[in-house]
Length: 154
Image 1: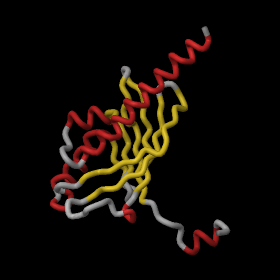
Image 2: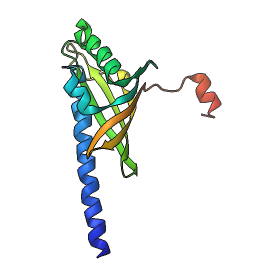
Image 3: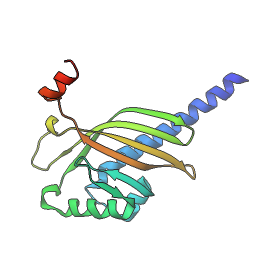
Image 4: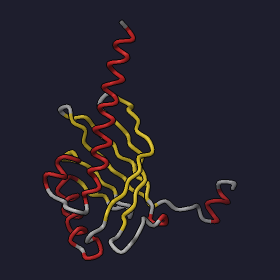
C-alpha cells in the first residue's frame, strides 16, 4: 500500500515538473509577443521580477509594460530567448524553485553569445492547480575579478 502512495506522488511531481518546464519554455515568447494572456499564464498578479541590472518590477502590469517596450525596440526585433533548466526543487507542495541559465540571441547572431549568459531563479507557486512565477531574479554570469578571487582564497 505504501509503495502505491509513493508511486502516485512521484507521478504527480512529474506532472508538476512538466508543467513548470513548459512554462519556462513559454517564457521564450516574452520578447516575441508580450501580451496580457501570456503574462497572466506565466506570472502571479503580484509577481516580482528583478532584472539583470537590478531593477525591481512589481506586478504583471509593470512587467508587461517593460517587456512590451523591449519587444518594440528595434534591437529586440526578432530576438529569441534561450533557456536551460539546471534544477527544479519542490521545498513545499505548492512551491517550486527553478534555477536556469539563459541568454537572448539577437536576429543578427548565429548562436547565443556565451558572454551574455545569465542565471536566474524562478519561484513558482501553485494556484488553483496551475503553476505561476511569483518571483524571478536574473543575474549576468561573470567570472570573479582579481579582488574577489583574492578574498575567496583562489
